[in-house]
Image (tube, rainbow over all chains, first blue to last red):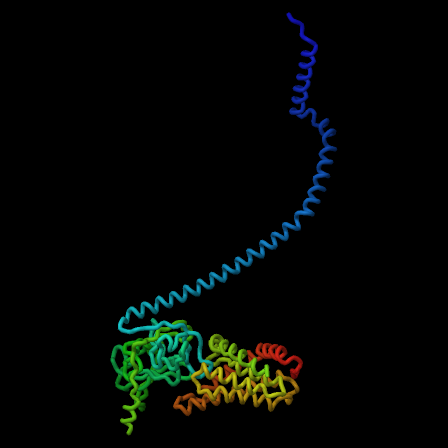
Length: 281
Length: 167
């Protein structure tokens, strides 16, 4: 048998020692010894690391905050822009809805020709019920043209400039519209007032009026086309000693929220003033 | 001179504001008249006669938009300018109190003139009804707009005529 060399024996002892130390370390027998040896190093490492991180934060954190503030500002601007765009799109959507409604109305009366116009203002005087629209003589608007919406009659053009026109609403105190009762066919007048309320006047006492009666333009007088919805009777007064009945009318158009209107451009108004002068003479 | 020229853009701007926004702010059937208030604000702060130019420009600008005859706004605003001139420095030496009086009386005059015109033209305006439903609410709204308008016109005056204000 070949004798074991001293080197091999020494190596084997070293290996066994290492394995033994590892085994003892893994078993936890060396923990107190390792603690005594390693704790100062760990403490020194922690101390140094904290200082290094503090120095690192000192140099890097302010820059990050600045970047964050700048980024936050950019995002806030972006949010504000997007909100503004949302409002604009909602406005456009509302306008599109109104225009679609007007288009539907125009399609339902193909004989008439229309120009759509936006309402851009109201008369400054609280005694008058007028609106200002954004189309004028350059667009083909002329004095006397009837103005409607998809709901019904609005009024008629009373003054025109090149790029705008003033429309007298049917609720104006100086407005008179010839109407007929839808169910009975009787003729009457719808008059406005300074408060903006409209009333049915000159209705024969013999007519049996009911609330809810629908009023349409009769076409008499030549100021408006016939069969345009005007309003609905909400209440009426029938006094025996009066020649005519009076009724309160709810207009179908909400004049306070008007945003767009249609001007009927192919309707020829009739000037009957010479005829009335002849009659009175 | 610049005080007269500046009245043109200011009145045009106020007129746009009046027709698009202020006329839509209604109390019962009344609405404010910021041009009348602007003329009054200018009038109560100066010894000169620029307020008459402001009244004329304001009246012409309103006449472009309203269906009322052109002389009604012009006369109304001139009345306000005259009233401001007459009362200048006489009411407790305070422009704000004088302004309230001028706007109050000026609004009454303007509305009485409008009612008179409508009555003459065959509209049954009804004095009591008009006063209740239009004039009184308009007065209230006008008084509400006095203070913001006073601040704006004061700033315009400081810019155009620095150091010439009556305080």
